[in-house]
Length: 240
Image (cartoon, rainbow, N blue to C red; front, side, top):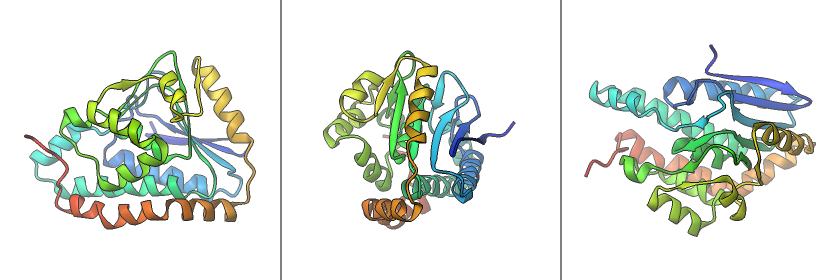
């Protein structure tokens, strides 16, 4: 079973995370990077929609058990490779020459919610699923680059609230604060709205890429300059 796969629909590359809870580990980051590369390389792609094949989970974030096993075994290079791999995923979404749209069809927790924030737009179903940053309770601090691009998606004061409380937000709440474009009644409504929006784009790649490069250039600098300090030292957990 492919961890991530892509289907084309009238110029829209629908990228499915396909691993149940879509817990993120090294294999996940490698698979998602490869599929995003394929989607961007396909000149027929006018938009990318990122979603999940699981009806309950968009992505439940970092595979914490995998991370702890690697820590215990002192396999630190695997952890570094994972972190740098996810940074590449975030940068690909931030700089893609076509719109990247998250169709949040279930729980988006931790790095799953963060992943959606790297996209240009978000839609979410409201009948099931929460959006949450539980890192404050898990002892996992955000990397500087994460803070930088989440704040393009979530108003700063709202991000402050969600990040420091770790509470779960619903789709209607996120719609009210313009974190998502629309809260959709169910999975069918979600995909209809997301795909309709995605298919409305037919922008020239050059100008679209330049817009995103200029908007997000400082974010990319932070990812490339400040994240390595924590990743290289495997300084990713706070146990106190």
